[in-house]
Image (cartoon, rainbow over all chains, first blue to last red; front, side, top):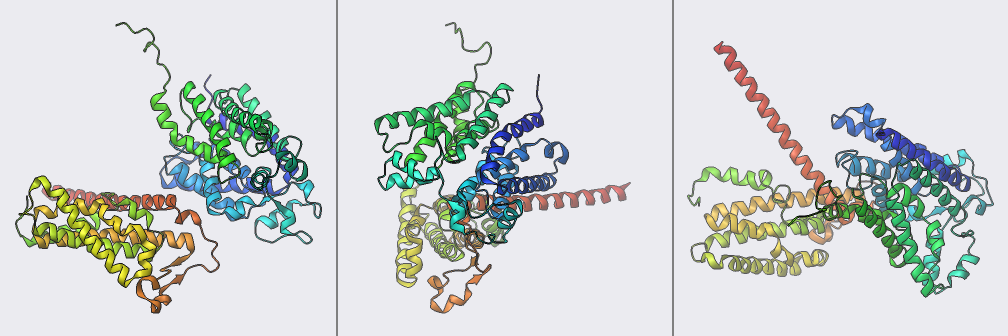
Length: 337
Length: 236
């Protein structure tokens, strides 16, 4: 039975809920403010661009695709980012990466990731100062109004300093400490930002996204090929180097539950518009994303790499589709000479 | 082979270079320097003027020697002519605007490889009189310069919040007052200064040009329809 675009998009949003609940639990109200603000901007930009392009408003505004882009972008940026970060990222994602390329179905690149990368390379300071998980902020219980005040430029609440509020992410910490020639085990056991098998809080958020992703698979909103290939390739790379030198390369489990691995595998890389069309093409696409994530995380300049890996493979998608296409019925199976 | 020296198409040559056949917006030639040095207005202006002078001189020289050069060897001869001119300009910039020369760096000698210079020599200057060739070089160079400056201004304003920064590189210490700070305490928008910002900026400029052309054509189309309507109306 064919399912409409809006049903698919709504299911994607539902599937994000377990991860989101964990995210809000560990990082507080800033997450909610960011998401609501990003959704409002995304719908506003979408409506404005549709009006300029003489397209009907209602079917495109209600298809939920702008909603998904906004939520994915809002999840990717630090929870207490200033408002203009969210504004610039979301507007660029919708106006340039989506509508200027022709709207839903014509965009070459994943709009949310384009917005994220734009922000990351333009505002590295804001984009890398992540809020610490709430249990590491002992001086203050950040309420909804505090989050609003910080995001919209009202400054920090009394008794809270910026260096207490923000911290390096687990992947970032690991990267800089390994460069200083520290042992992976020592780093993970001493820095408070690490949890049981990933980052503190982050590991449970990732687990939530895994749960939602599995539900999407069960509902057949996404196919298994891309997530399996991506996670498999990442784990394979991590396993090889972990076996060779466990003191300098973190375990596969850590890679799986850190950063945006699981969010990316189930919600970002699986975007049907920007991924290859054939089954074998998707396996290759997913696997190369996994390899790229490991390569950039381990030897690249940035701590996490899901956005870069997805965009690079978006770029490769037309080539993959050119060389690997689904076998058309009656074609090529039994060639008679 | 339009080698007649009629003066009535000078306007057309100028309009071709500046708008209808603009090297940056329509021919999409010389993208490498265009995208690489359009980070600020002054950089764009510096390279734009250098390219403009190169185009005028190379077009004139190529036109002068067009009867002496055999078709078989014309491209190497053109390249030698262009390279000599660019070398002279490079040495002059090194002497008179040394700081700007340092900023623009490799992109000054690379004017030799700018396809629009060889393109104009081959497609236009080698087939026409010196006057028309020089005018074509001037118009094409000015069209290129204009886009370099506009794109430079766009990227500089967005990326740094200023206009004409480092004007002293080109006009000396007395020109520092030209620099305009659009927004005080601007954080900077690095994306506009990076290569992708140049690509997207140029894409927007091309889109703008196409939009203007389309609107003009529509207006002209509407005008002819009205005239025709009147004509048939009076006839009926």
